[in-house]
Image 1 (tube, rainbow, N blue to C red):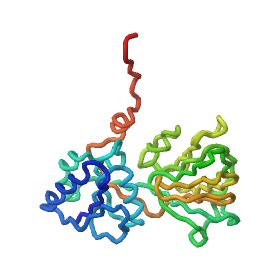
Image 2: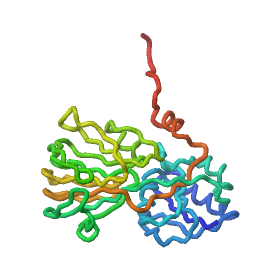
Image 3: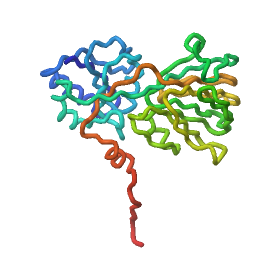
Image 4: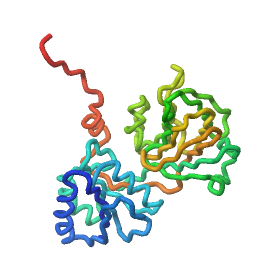
Length: 293
């Protein structure tokens, strides 16, 4: 097996772990290269899998730099929660033989493609065939695409459409469009639902809406979501996975649709969704009382 390594050396313990793991793994796999800069284009990597040492942010960066290349990512978590980077260092060692023999399960994760069209270019969700030729910015997002109000942090006005339906006007601090993989990230913090990774859907969640009736909505991943910036701040920005970003100006349009290329994740066989929610998000736990009554 050929293995390429992406390592976030800024995280504590990653450097020593990398120094220890490479000679240990070299007994059973061929290590074809190592990226510690987190900037290398990974689309031309020659490997059967990419080992990502860091956390979910490191894995999101690696997924974006793959550029659609279908090489599975195996994330080892040196961060906090680790929903995408699902292996602990100890679990990775326990399952390394299965990785080397390519016996570990692989899941296909939906990815959003975000495009920004300049003011004056019309797109309602149905007539977006020329988006690629006209867009001034594009990026992919494994977790989410977020329009945030930005400085000076006044409410912004957005118009949201899906597949040509008449748009709805929305006032608030922004909007999150999340994949199932990203539903446990910013989306859930803003009150959005948790979506199973196998569900072909995306979630649209408002950020601090100026309306009690504007609730999160889950739509088919086949839909094209269009967000028009009707009134924005100088600092209003589109973020893709919190990494790739661009400022948005009045009249510009964000077009969000499912990318034709999913991201492949090598799954930890010890990780289960319900157990992960309980352990990492303390989901469904009863209140705990401290002190004397």
